[in-house]
Image (cartoon, rainbow, N blue to C red; front, side, top):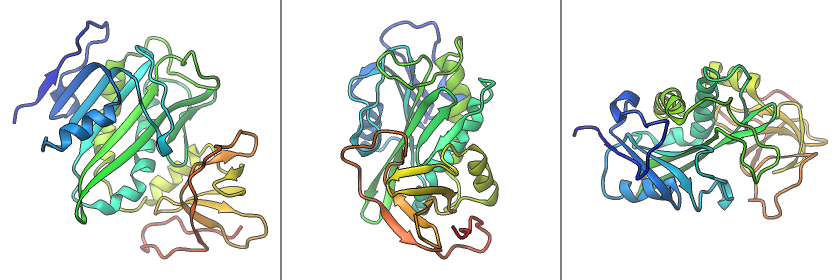
Length: 282
């Protein structure tokens, strides 16, 4: 099928690139939606191929993990969802981390500032939160049918949010799409485990490494494992606890009043010999 582009209903200075420029099947650019994630899921259910990208100028009900609302003010950021159809569902457990690393790397071509990652799905600069990632999969019996990768990145600091960050003035959505989309598409077809290089890069970019947290458990962050688990040294424990779900809250930040329960495994989990990421004692 021929790549297609659907234009926004109003003009903008930063015109969207053509789908083929980004290696996409279809680029759908809309003015206002409830969420780009909902738009992508709706179209995926009709059988559209992988490589659909939905970009919106504004979301009225953008969402993050655990149902948290994502502020998506018009012309202040890039709000998008990429549809992929991976053949191997096992890579889903590390996908948010791998996508985060890929985006951080790509964004540093647009800013001189270091881009950091926060487990499991946030992007930060020194001035605050820059963006977030939300991944949702849909299954057909035991086989993954499609994956929707939602991404929000601030081009301007949201007026309603304290502690947020944005890319430098002058960066356009078109420029952002050109550097981010190819990186995310490549990350969406990676292995089931984080490799040694990825683990080392995560360690170098990790906003939380060595810091004390109060959720999903209380302790000191040691890093991440090759299966994407957060490793936390809880007080009095000899081995780190591996957490596969939950939202991280630093000791000096307010906690979520309704946090999801952590999924935890104490000690070392068996991993492939070449995966790296063995947990060190606390």
